[in-house]
Length: 309
Length: 309
Image (tube, rainbow over all chains, first blue to last red; front, top):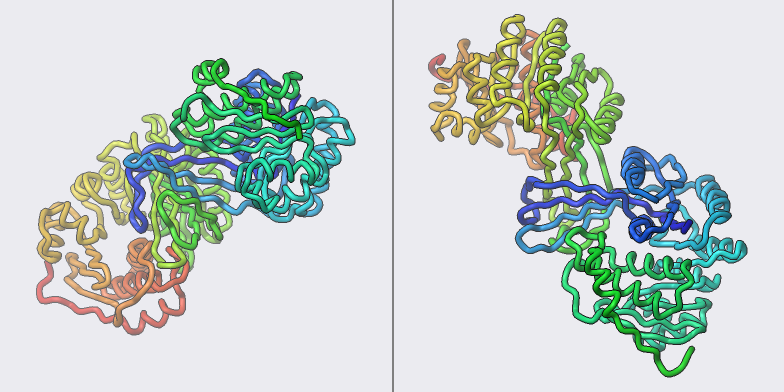
């Protein structure tokens, strides 16, 4: 199975309203709830691609129970969340019928105790024993040490499991130094890590800092990948319109699924770009449109660049 | 005990944000959760006044469980909510640090099945056996017949239990015809019921429609009460600034507690106005400031008007 780690699990709630006006009262016309957090989104896409996935991270309180109930109804996803005494956070996306725009309200989430963090590390090590790859995704909740991902990367590498890291800020900086197999920063995260706003230069610098391969997400422009095996650029054939929520998580699912299928880099990138674009064009945030995905798979072009890094 | 009925129970969530801007992403700095719905608010104030209270209405799903957990921690309030298969609604108040204003998002709530409505009516009749008074509060959830309150008023009257009705629209119109002991409309509700925007005329008309006594809430201007025993106006001595959320529910608690204590009308109104103003001035929405309450009790003036209605 593929293991995805979401330390900042969430219940993602979407409210439909006619038009959000500050300081007014709104009747919500539709409520949808999904288990969320980046690694959970990655897991859902992996499962839809036919992979067995296990999700771990933290769960607690009434909201954690709802997350687990919803996870139980997703086929091929195994729940290995670690219980905590705090309460899992909610995120609320208020979708505006008139403008199509979304307003986001994110709860801070529970503080993890040192004992809970230790329990998680033990659970993680046990889960790695049956994992073919691991994706470490998203921000760290309060209480988890800033070097957390660095430690989890090292544990995976010691176990010989390929590890993808998708986070930002100081947790990314420390995590990169622990030599993950792939990082997938966007241009902002890459600039914050390296100080450079030039994607190619920043990507190469991120490799020097320890990442074996860097797949930089350039938004609608697609991906730039630099690895020991070569350097590639890839983009969807047409500009895809829609909701970018979850597009990055779908790219991670594309990369890690193709990795465990031993596909070469160009095929990994094709899959990541097609899944990402199919997620942007899907009507429900974070879902991907399977027809668009299949159609794009045959139309994404990958360009190999002059020098391998 | 005093029985309060909240057919549209809710989990009231308050989010603090720096400043709510449509289509932006917000970090919530503080999350508070309270069991809500008008009858639940009334119950909390009654309990704070030293009365034994039982709350009934509906509860379901994960949110219903949270409401019940929170109710269990309120002293002197007994939970007699009736289980349903749907999920209790949430309301979210987004409180803006910069402006002090609040944006409200209200979920529609579950649809009640005919079987669930029957179960409720049986539970209600059983609970009346040990009630000294009953308050029927708030809107009706989908699935509950529009004449619901009329039926509940009649059941209470048959049992000889004084009944206060605090609702609006068609449920109020039908409920009034069933001859409740007290209704407590605000000026808008009263105008909708009677077609008149003149508070005195509308109040007298509401009595002709069936209400034994009408206590019209005139907002910051206080209360106008018309009953077989006389007619009174009362207002807080000074304009109270703050959050009016829950002020009406506190007034209901004041009226019904004073009724079961057999206080005369002027004392009932003094208590309702003092509680209401103490709720507006409290820092937490829906709570009342006990010091302000005690202080106002001695300063509220009640004016008896010329003719009994």
